[in-house]
Image (tube, rainbow, N blue to C red; front, side, top):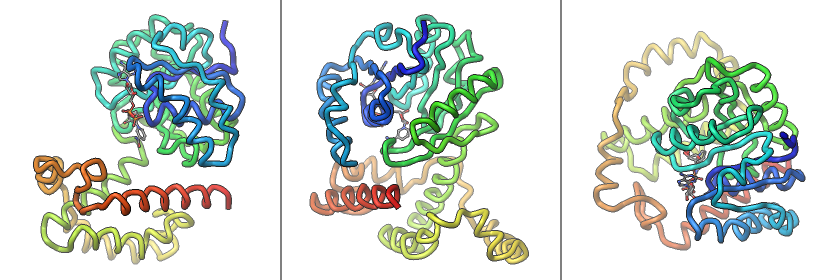
Length: 301
Ligand SMILES: NC(=O)c1ccc[n+]([C@@H]2O[C@H](COP(=O)([O-])OP(=O)(O)OC[C@H]3O[C@@H](n4cnc5c(N)ncnc54)[C@H](O)[C@@H]3O)[C@@H](O)[C@H]2O)c1
């Protein structure tokens, strides 16, 4: 028997905890499954911290069930959200299992960042209930969820998922075709590819990239998307600009050598204190705090 108020989540990491917080905050019964004991043990504290950061009642976290048993998490769930590592083989094996143990009506959703949903669903037999739901971090602050049906997904399943997400205050958008990266990450990583190429080619340093974005078009983005912007400046001007600039932009189809070189030198970003840029502990903390305060302020406006 399906309970419309029950949600299962596979993977209790950063995204799994955030998605659990969203549903628990709206009174859903939430069950989260993770194979790692330490991750399970820390889940409630992490959800409590998330709740405190948005001035919500931390005791809401007490209503989240955590288990290593997938069948227990799935029992009666209206939908299951997979938030396991971004590795195709792991996701394929999880969905093969979910397909076997989930009730026939349970909606199966993957939170992959960029992998094609039909590829993840390769061994899924009941493909009509499979889709992608791409949330953004942190799920309780960023409104968008991209909903990505595959060719076999029933329209009713897509509609049910869009309704569910709307009911918990999210902003679902329908992605009509299952392409890797969907919409948001294709746009985001087109920008990152060019940023890495500009550094690689010595056009500017890494810090300058961030200064340029944050002090120019980045300021407009919350109120003016790229399509609105093209219409605003005029499509004739956009055409003239594109005739000159598009042939000049990076067309690399592999990751930038600058990115690979950093990784080979142990420069992984915040986690090692050095990445494209060098970071002190204070700068790391300040960047994280500024980001969450900015997102919170935007959400409340
Ligand atoms: N971090 C982000 O900003 C972000 C944003 C959007 C989407 N995503 C996507 O969400 C997914 C999860 O990302 P994350 O950042 O939460 O990762 P994470 O590493 O924080 O969490 C992954 C969790 O999955 C668990 N896990 C490992 N194998 C498993 C298995 N077989 N079954 C169940 N759980 C298993 C791990 O123990 C871990 O707790 C990835 O596909 C990622 O690309 C991440």
